[in-house]
Amino acid sequence: MPDPADHNARATAEDAGQPQPTRRRRDLRRADGVLSDAQTGTMPAVTPEPSTSPDAGTPVPRRSSWAEAAAAADQAKPAAHAPAPTRRPAKPPVTALPPTPLPQVPEPQPAQPAFEDFSTTAEPHDGGEAAPPSSSASGTQPDETPAFRRIRPTAADVIAESPMPDFISSPGLFVKEQKPRPVGGFRGAIYAMTGGAWNLGPSAKQRDEDELARRISRQLQGSYNTAVLSLKGGIGKTSTTVGVGLTLAEFRGDAPCAIDANPDSGDLVERALGEGIYQQSSPRTITDLLKNIESVDSLTALARYMHHAGRLHLIAGEQDPEVSDSLTAAEYLRIRKLISNYYSVALTDCGTGVTHNAMSGILQSADNLVIAAGYAVSGAKRARSTLHWLASHGYEDLARNAIVVITDKDEVSSRVDKDAIEEHLAGICRQLIAVPHDRGVADGDLVTLDVLKPDTRRAYKEIAAAIVDGYR
Image (tube, rainbow, N blue to C red; front, side, top):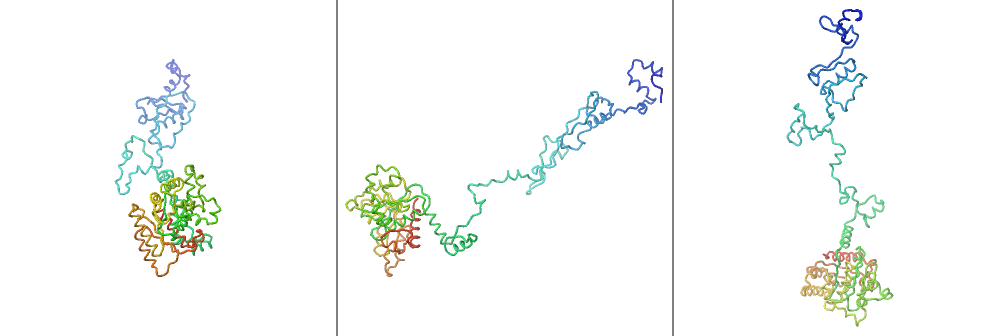
């Protein structure tokens, strides 16, 4: 061990007035100028290399603590050589030492995620050219932060890019279409026995019936009137009006109205209600309605002058022979105008012929016509004459769009060629429909749909559908 500094008289004389640490370092210096750390017993100060210092030429302060020197060396390393952290690195703990200026450490670069967006890749797709390489691949620093790269789209992206289905206009996308229930026949029996497990769907006949019902129940904009007329009495004009009116009332959402405009004591209400019921009710007629038409301002007020056969509303004709033929065209037009305020479909049962007083008003307000005829030779000729008269008196459109109904009321003999009569009349009208012989029609009494034959009911459905088809 060397002599202590306080026993060296020369050192004491030379070091007068100098700080103690400086004197100690000088005494320990060798001849070659290297400090002897082994004899001082202290850690040498660690300084960063000049090449890695962020500020070249700036003197780096020495550290007397090994921990502080190591921390300063770690901070002085370039950030590019360190792995990209996912978080901002926490500062190392610093011991309580006298404050010393620290070198400036550059901010760490933002962490690059482990996934990228497919839109930024340079792989060609659909035969297109590859995208140009990014600036990071060429070694240059990009101006902006590079876009993220995703390995696969997220669930949020898939939902956002998928088109939203229309729940209002396309309910079939979410609910399976159910077959209509078969009614009657073999298909209906199978459906009933299996409790609906086996549904073969409706038959062709049932599909035709459903199509007729759809045509009859078509919604209408406005009020329409159909006139039922003939040149010969007793061939099914009134029974056709009642049967078609009841059919319209069965399938349509709005109740139809039937007007008895027959000047010869028409029996429209009696055929719809029955003679006994009509006599027991208040027998108000079209004449009573005309007398008080100014006070009728609602459907409730109008109902006082009407009769009801189920959902079919009727206005009875005048039964007094002295006043039955007094209905004029102007009076009928007033009745028709009143009915149009409350009913979308009206049927007018006309009298025999086309020359009575109210006929001009009926034809003027009619939207289409039903011409009643029979299989007798005289009935077919009169139906043809009616169409010719209409075409020659300014009603050509009504004649062209007329519906000819042939009712087999009297069961003519086999000598009459029914097919020839139908072919003869079919060429001069829009549609010809035949009503088979039925006792519920031929007796001239009450007409109800429940007692009619299935073929008769179907004929009335076809007439009702043809009538509604003509409303344009």
